[in-house]
Length: 341
Image (cartoon, rainbow, N blue to C red; front, side, top):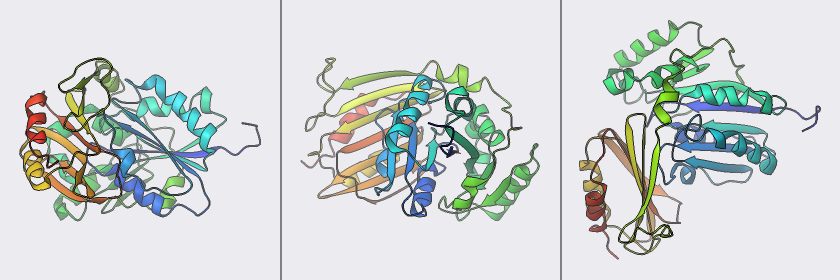
C-alpha cells in the first residue's frame, strides 16, 4: 500500500454473548453506501460457525469467519494474517470486526494499531452494545472481560430498550455517563440499530483496560475436539445423512459444542425446539435448521428464544455455549430423534 493510498476506516463491534452484534452489522450493511466494498471479520467462540451465514448477502461485501476461540488469544496468530488477506482480496472501503461475545478487545486494538497495519488501517470508534437487563446477572457483572468491553469502547449503545424496563435503562445510562474517561457517545437503541455516522467517531486513545490480563489467562486453555458420531477417525469430518460432525471446545469458564448436519437431514422443528428450549444450563444456542423445504434461524439467549426464516441453504448447524460440560452425546441422540428424513 503506497503512502498515497487512503487508510481503511476500521471499527470493532463488541458486546457480551447474545447482545445482538451480528444483527447490528446487518443493520449497518443495510445502510452501506452504494458502490462501497466492505470487509467483515466475524469471530465466534463456538466451533462450527453460524454468524457468517446470518450476514446479508450483497454486492460489495466480503466476509471472513474465525471460529473456535477468541481472536485476541486462542486465534491471535490468525488475526493479522486474516486482516491482511481481507485487505488484499477485497480492497475494502471499510473494515468491521466482530469479536466473540467473551472476547477481550485489547489484543485486537493492539494488533490493528501496531506497526503491521499503521499504514493501512484507520481504527475509529470501538462500539459496544449493552443489554441493560444483563447488569442484574452475576455471571455477566462479575466477568472482567465484560467490564473491559465497556472500558475500551468509545461508543456504547444500550440495546434492547424495547425489552428492558425504564428503570433498567436509566440506571445503565447513569452508570455509563459516570465512566472516566468519558465515552464519546452513549445512546439507546432497539433491534441493534446503529447510526452509520457513529462509525466515523474518532477513537479515544486514552481508554484503558481495567483487567488487561483477563483475556490472557482465560483463553489460552481453549481446547477443541472434532468428532464424528458413529465414526471417530481423523478423516471423518464430512457429515453424512443421520451422522453429523460434532465439534467441542472450552475456555473462559464456558463450554461449546456444535454440530453440522448433512444437507438432506430434515427436522421436525417443534420437537427440536422443545429439546433446545429445555436444555440447561446454557448461555447461548444458535442454529440454522432445515424444516421441509425451508431453513429457520433459532436463537436462544439464557431462557429467551426466537426463530425466523433465513435464506441460508447449505446445511443444518446448531451451536451451544454452556456454563458447564454437558452430555453432548445424549443430547445429540435426542436431536437425531427429531429427524423426519
